[in-house]
Image (cartoon, rainbow, N blue to C red; front, side, top):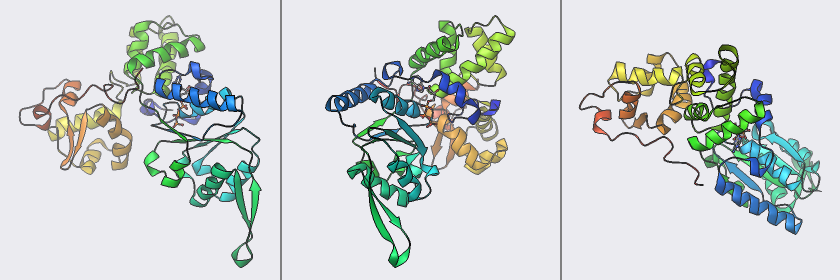
Length: 354
Ligand SMILES: Nc1ncnc2c1ncn2[C@@H]1O[C@H](COP(=O)(O)OP(=O)(O)OP(=O)(O)O)[C@@H](O)[C@H]1O
């Protein structure tokens, strides 16, 4: 992982072990997302009382908010085994049939990125979810035969970052659908204290506040920034994560007070300095920062828009008043930024209610 993707919500292979060490194992250790937690608690306890597997569960939401963690928690709370796979890994329906027929009674099958599952496999999944049965087709052409196979009762936990891409029939087969929201800074502070305790890192309240404010509402980023600040505190200070060590460390790593990295700031600076705040087309903006339009659109813009720093208008990208102020400038009269109300607070929307 390089400094440049320190605030990416996606996981890097190299940090999987570090993530696992702080992953909550039970529902009561899972921080925030109270509504989802309560609903899941009822679903799982109800199923256990009846002695049958719960409804299939769909978890949707942006990366790094805890979908994989919750899938593992579901299995742990049920006292069940878990099989883990992902949509892109299931290329043929035979791959899925092999997994389904090897499940034992009550197992949890976790399919990450379920919206990316191949069509024939998706159709096979329907009958497995509904009737605990699959028809495996053997042979080709007119001689092909469908062999029905039983599947032990199981619970499917599907995770998706793009629930809009799920087909209707697939969505309808989940009896429980939960959407995970971005975390408030207060929730992330609680999470940071918990992770710091597990890692044996002393952290002050203001140290946790400083890191949470730069974590883009995302637990994965909060934990990653904590690990970087811990390095700094141990090498350059007395090992304690304080507001000072957090600020100094995150300056070294180029993560600013709102959690923007170098490229995010380059985009805003180009908009403000070179195009007077816009509007400007995506490809022109991308050339100005020396990046591909896709990178600007998919890596930078989602957070800049959510943070109320950039707006996409029919005439092009524009910097909001908040962007000008964040860069320490005053928007000139007559610009989009000056004529529009300040952007909403980053966490005033989309936050899970306690
Ligand atoms: N509510 C939570 N409480 C404590 N830690 C959490 C919580 N949610 C997520 N985490 C931590 O954040 C990290 C990322 O979580 P997880 O892998 O579950 O995210 P995800 O939504 O499955 O991401 P992806 O979509 O990329 O697979 C993990 O280390 C996990 O321990």
